[in-house]
Image 1 (spheres, rainbow, N blue to C red):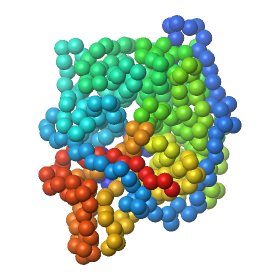
Image 2 (cartoon, rainbow, N blue to C red):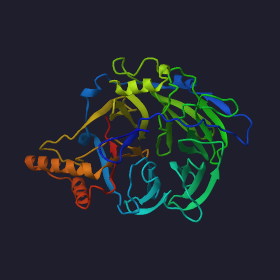
Image 3 (tube, rainbow, N blue to C red):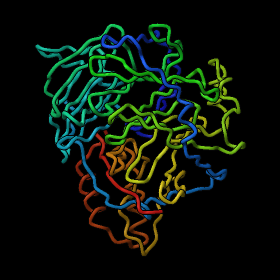
Image 4 (tube, rainbow, N blue to C red):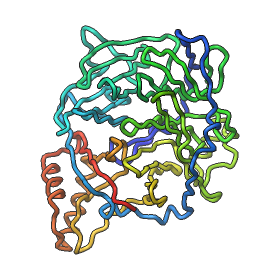
Length: 421
């Protein structure tokens, strides 16, 4: 597995082909599993045209960010984060999943104080986790749900990390899951050699309960979706859960209100000049995928977050990751190259910025890596002195935070909204 890490230790995306065993789903309550083709909802999907001139676009973040606040995560030997794989904000805690370095789930207060952790390296009398692969939050019952991939256990914890219960299913293995409401979960396994028990083939995701009783699967009947769906994203923004199949450039929303619904929301249309290969179904070999990563094409890997009516999507080209914001209200697109715009008349609120790694549904969340912002702050301080720029209260607060930080500390989380565009 190749992990491409953005500058800094905390913001990463996975670009890999994962070869796992086939997934097998069973349903102990119902003999029939409902099948649903994703292309049947494609007709309801809004198409958004991506500009050809992305490389010339700049994101002047100090003009666009509002309601900015910082949360410095406490750093000690018990809570050092290797990579941030997932962020969940509950009513009382900020929950950080690090699935690749420490293999832990960390709990911080809303002010950033360390409050506890769940870890494979910290067994207790009641549980011993072996490989934490994902976590989600049950908004209806205020529970953190953790999946141990190696042992095939789904664990339930309180919002603060106290162990409650666990369930095991020898017939279910997956890589990503998220709570979709009414005690239902969406499970996703990006295995190349997919298969569903009972003769069902070519599925993309499954819907079931916490005991892994599967009642619903969605499968591919769309020739534009590659058989190599190694995308590891089943992103959520608060209670909103999205599914974004690799190479489809389509965002589906998954809900479980009165019934389970998969709704096509947005399909991104790249110009012929910037798009990936015309027939995505031809992506059938490792060599094809390697060629795509080397080519100068834009690609949407499925990482997306929404805050109010603004949607962020991460785009990749070769090994370069960046992103754009799309206003669902106005239809406008901004983003691409983040630029620190500084003028004498400006009062700068944020001197360093990276694109979001999570959302609460109301706010975007970005990571401010200590070793990077230290370098950026030195540059900004020089520019500020040369131009006699005033400091805003927020910028002064960030300077106070940075003065107490070491470059190996946990990151600062930046919470913010975007101005209307």
